[in-house]
Length: 338
Length: 257
Image (cartoon, rainbow over all chains, first blue to last red; front, side, top):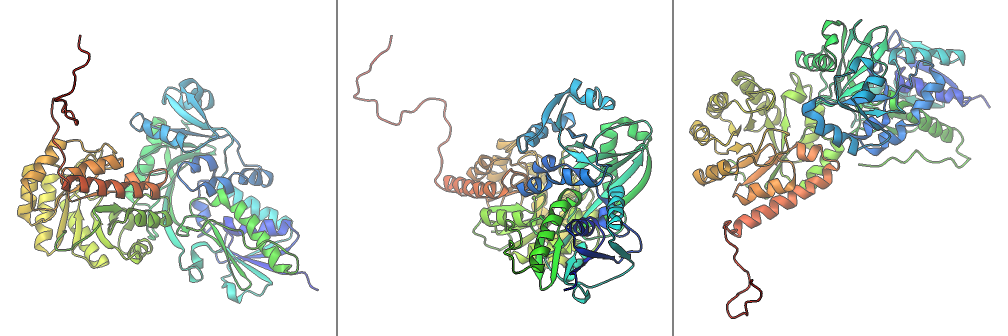
């Protein structure tokens, strides 16, 4: 019997992690992507790249932390650029009660005083009196991480065919893994887009080792160092499916946050303004759904890099159980229903 | 109750900032709210981009009260109201004209002007205002048949900042439905508003950002019901002296130095 073949549609973080997970389990995989180059038109390109399950725990369902925690090792084993420096959460004096509340709603952190903050991030010395330090968290540069996954796939002989638009039902393979993100709405009617906007700046004056979140009454604001003086500032979360450029209001809020974190950002250059739509199911948690020989893996919402490894692992489990129906594999992973 | 529409629930719920639409749906059920507010500007951007989320809200089968949150001028608010009427096919509009970016305090001058324009255009306006009597008078004069004074600044969770002001507003407008909108943090705040004789309360953040929004929605529903029942049961007025609940006449007086 010929070796079963699997086609993964979509080369964003969901598609590439699924493909790699399948290839690592010895399966024959091919990836097709409608864009001509890696990252083009994929919302993974705009991601923050924080692997911060316990920060997320403060504002999301427990599943996000539970599924997200193992992803730090997953990335560290496959992408050497994964920085395990922890992450920092600060608040402006007027929002300090929110910091206490944030702390109450999560775990795996230490309180830092002004000296502690100065020790970890010297540039923030004297700027904040208290902070939360999440020692075990990590971050990565999503664009470099996607490129590293593509390279690993290539090393394993997996071909990524760019510029190919393929509908899952037309793909000729034993199993089709549909990782098209928002483009999969034709098959997943309850999928919606949630707009996110980000800014990239280059600042020679400010240096940070780890992502810093600043509590804000309206946005989950964060600044992620990307090396070489580059910083990504994200991200808005708007229940809108408008594509198109960043609004002035959003840009002001994001840039203001950077400036409030460190006035040195006032001199930074704006390198990029980006906006895209995150694919989300109604409970904002990822899901794997089967229809015939197609598995739809989708709904990573704003947790693409954090949750993709677990989504990939579970997708690979599901693929294996479809290929070997005689062995008693588990059904699709159970997911709490809203 | 509101512009000829009778409702059995006295809790109106905002739909922003929940962990997910699924949690929002469960919170609405637990709150037993029949009216939900939806922000057009924040969620919409321009045009019909927020359609997925709006369709989801409409699919819940509730009465939608679109709002003009985020509008800082009369013109913006009026334009947003027209867009809302077209999208949600309702004459109802929760009118917000923000005057101060930090406290989100209403610009009452712009509010009265926008209310007049919208009422003339056939809208049924729910103005988000302060507890100022004179402003309230002008809003009624402009055509508003509901008034929504704040309890405290939006999202501040401070409760009723000016109980005296809210009370005199109630006394001044016995026949206009009054809703405390904004600033509530815990169910006792909602109960207190209802005990003052307010017709309803409107809240969002207190439920949406609670650790367990669904349970908090249920708690608010109970508080609103309790406060309303207490109001109808004619509560006592506070007094300065103790008034024993058991008779003292005929009892031996013990102690006393």
